Image (cartoon, rainbow, N blue to C red; front, side):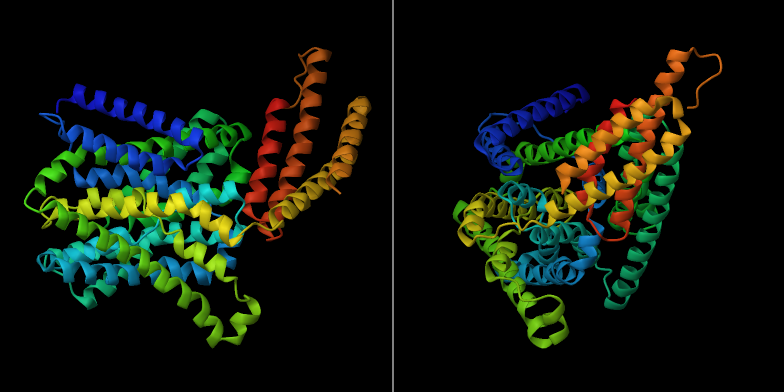
Length: 524
């Protein structure tokens, strides 16, 4: 395909993805579900053409284009306090379940298709990590308990790294150079160096953000950082995934103090667009490639392909259920300390977590990035697509019914945290206002008006002037300084609450957005 045709195809896919997202919004379904159905329909439509278009991205390019931005955004918005509080269940899912799923799916695939050999376990690693995008979108709309959302988001953040490390080991085994001792040493190196690279990039990003005052430049830098973490780590044969995740966590925790209000407000929209485009392009790209995949599988009877797809998909779903329930109850039966610290959750919440293992763009990217010389590559991509279809569409469409049926609803913890944050911000502004009244004695009327506004909010919640400037301009700047000083005091108070663990990142970002809007209105 010539470059012009390729660009036209990319634009067409993005237009189709936008239309599908509009449909998803109209019918109230998470857009990844509609995208995967749209990609499948597009592929079947193209397969009927006399000469369907042939698109084949280099496998290494797939990882580079798709994974770093997705992982960075997920890590950036990770609520660290809640993540730490749920580290045990997250670890059991993100590491234990990934290893279990890889072995079980690989074993079943090997039993059904002995010709796959070690590639069966590469398939297991590809379909092991669930993608929380669709699940959390559904949960937030239905008001599911925040802890369930936190556990799934934490699992999705870490399981990508653990699954892709296993995937990498499987590719090494396919090449015939695998050894257990070597794999153990490589795992330590890959993880340690990847985290170190990510920490350097994340701290460097915070340093740069603090010294840049142009919101556009701040956003451009944030879009480049995922690749700045991924590429150096991969260049030294470490985990680019862990590097990106580490950089994203550090950036997310420091952004409240070092990013400008305009950049934070603009960034939310920009990153939403970027992630949508990646998801849309990835799911529709598989549709464009589906004709060539089906053509490569023409030697298999249709009944056999359907049977294999159903068998592997059921294995993935059952393996998660078979892991989640024992991993939830056995530690509590064995340890009284765990029972005391973390009482037994209701069985409905446990089932919802076990049913929310929807596979998405990470599994798709891993399948498309399989080297071209891997045996039965088209079959592995086909089986991955079957798993995505069964989990994302089958489980995704039934998940709202399951949530309502089991009554897994949210408590009021987030609202309480937001109320705490608003109270702290108001108290900090009142204290700062007393000082500002002394610093700006000529503007007591403004100070009194602001104090009246703060009193109302509290009840509801239960550069320097240049000598050459004229008096009107100087007064305007001083008014601006007073308002921005109040916003800064409020922001710092809320950040301290987050740092002390009194509130979570979700509550911080809710109040932070309000303060950013106020700062922009004041002329920041």
